[in-house]
Image (cartoon, rainbow, N blue to C red; front, side):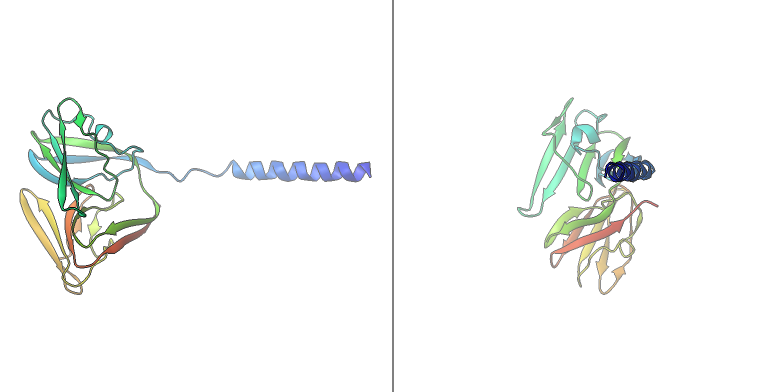
Length: 202
């Protein structure tokens, strides 16, 4: 009986050791990186391409210029919220990946976003009417290839070089513009939808 108990204990110990050794070969799938985003003097329609944990303005723009301003848009109320940098951001807004926003820069600069690439099944709600959106992952591609949800008559507006460029959905995007990394855009949606992505870094 004692021999059987010892054999059982040895078997469990070996199984536990094998399990722990197998687990030691499991690596984290988190991907951390950075994105350099050039900003022109004046207004820029941009986005936060990486999740840095807090996603607060103080962590996203630690080297902001004095007097720089951020504007976010609340589609529910149709109102803007602003934050001004005078040595610190006031208020210190949180801007998660997937949300577009305006950045008013007093001088041209390049901002470096640092954080984790969002992966897995990602959902970005698109409300009825106008909203400011962006890709939740740092990937440049066309609206069609990014599986942006669209209804007949939906319109997307990009702001580039001080001018707006639009794309209209009439069964397909015309033209099928490319969404840049860290670029925000307006969407005028005729119905609420979810922008669903299944994204994995290979």
